[in-house]
Image (cartoon, rainbow over all chains, first blue to last red; front, top):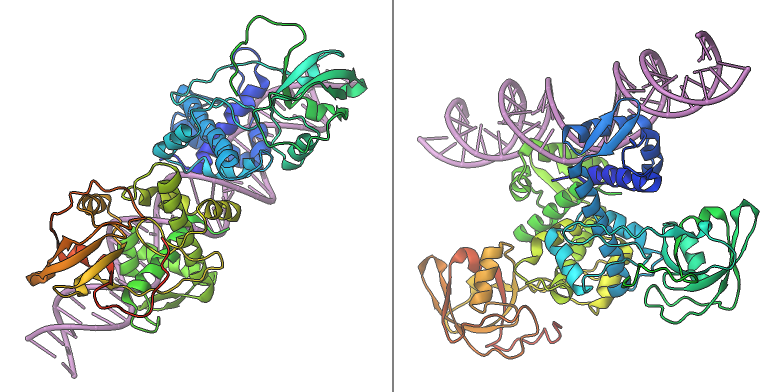
Length: 249
Length: 249
DNA sequence: CGTATATGTTTGACGAGTCTAATAACTGGA
DNA sequence: TCCAGTTATTAGACTCGTCAAACATATACG
């Protein structure tokens, strides 16, 4: 029904809006942003957006950009659900490493039936997070908004638990895996250098349900440049906040 | 690299040639035959064949048809390997029934990477047959030619073991499943009526490694029309033939 | 053997997705 | 405020996969 390409554009639109998020999701996404993400030229984006607008998946604003309609948003969420279920399935059942899973999921997400989605979900026990710590939308396409602070927004001394790693680059992920920065790991922020370089010291490392068993070069301190630190989301654990008791895997 | 559609045409070519098999695979496959299988018109087939010929996947003979090149044949076998591994994977790991598996595999076969193919193969223990009893080509694309006789070519009194069911129609498969005609089951041919209607009586039913646990309405005799009987391949067990000891799974 | 019917190919059209080159609109700095 | 530079759109072209209608070839029967 809905072509792999269309889903790619819709998903890009959704995820770019998530990134900007100026409170109300009113901002139209510029063609150039989509072109960058998908590796195509801007004329291609304009042309494709016109077709998507005809199908009522997006609303276009000439010379500004486009945003998803209700319907488009549901399609995006469904695609993302497929993607994350597949990522988890590949790591849990097919010996993939969480660092390698992205590309395969990006292809398959467009081709699994509702039936297969359901079976995978069942086999995995209706999981709520993928191997990178990203939330898996529910079967009825609800997304629970757990707004996590990026690592780059923390202060020296804070005790944090890695919740999610947004980066998709296998090399970056492999590095983070090697140094133990994986979902569930705990660190203390020891230094915020200029240009926002963040340095972390391992804190303790039990309770790691997620991700591959990292080759834990533990005890070592880890420094991450800003570009990487912004893709790492953490939950702060030093100051005991009231609300967030249940974040199952 | 090679587009789902191209793989569909290549696979059709391969499987239609298998059907005819006038000894040497010299016969070109007619456009109309491919059009029937794929549900497209003949001009579409002609056009597509030209493109495939340009890529050296097929050789064309004007007004006759086309046949696969060496390269095209390998692509077909690879696609079929994907298909059959997926079928088995879906039944073994994802609660699919052998009667429902075809459609999903037909889509996914074009989108799994070499890596995923390998992992699925490993998880399944490098299987040699899919849930319908069809042989799975090996990783190096060798196809072992176990020429089985169709059920329609047997005589009254023959004791046979169901080896393979070629039909893909879920309704036909569901019927065969219900009456116990599944790979591994044994029957005695009790009657060959005119128009080649075949009647079978259950023989014994241990040793059934394959397929879903049929709701075994056993004891009952089964009659199959020719159209179905030709899609069922059997191994004859009454006259002990020398060569075929190891047909695992 | 020659023509009627089957089948195959060509032609012209279309939608999706893509590009480059040309043009139009917006935006920010002096 | 106006213009330069950036960004978006339009124009024109191309491939793949598809179709219907027109045309060409092959085959089979009388």
